[in-house]
Image 1 (cartoon, helix red, strand yellow):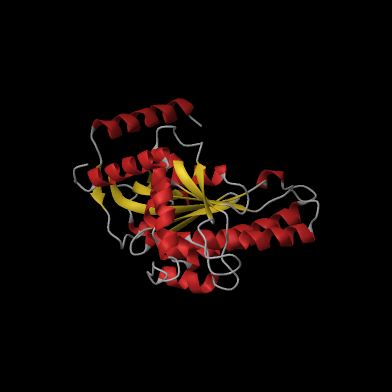
Image 2 (cartoon, rainbow, N blue to C red):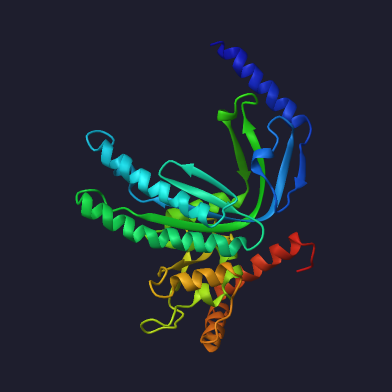
Length: 304
């Protein structure tokens, strides 16, 4: 290893890169990540994607010594299950990250597909954890934490040009980072959405209001949540936390309604309006909402 030559080469490469700006082109809904360039200095801008992150709680406490086989089984069932869910809801990109995975959705009904995927991970997490606790009672308390964020990204494949095994797409921008931080703020079996995601789903009755089971329908399945790992002045910080899962009776019906693009339920008209008014009555959340609206308008070329 000639270390000095390597460092000199890296310095020269950095200087060449910074000497002129790369091309940035807008992507389309049919973006195929596998066709992105590896050598050409061309990045693709996706103006609005939705990122779902699933993170396994207490994964670092799972043993890899005498308990290696059980840990391997937990990873296989857990992470494998998350990837299967993302695939079933037509994620456009999936990447496994250690003890979890993240998926990126773009194109038609991206918010609907992403939300259904996230809620399904949350719902499955309950059964997953129960089976672990039954099989291995001494294992640490675990289950998946889910975070969802959205926004604009830049993407390009980066790595060793002639070795596909050393190439990965890089997603530059806030959504992946913010979804990860939202998941980190969650507890097991919880789902947290950043502010802009809530803006896009708050008028969907199938997502935001409970079914008719028990005392339903009601507006108590979502709670205000401050994502404290995000910057204090970032309006995305004012998120919401889902405290419910798919209902055993109505879950499949509601999931399919969401995927079909349906939003309104005839049984919750008054409830919907009171929930939205309550959100606007909260001054902190109202200010954050206006800031997010202004940002979206600027990106579309509209005045505030």
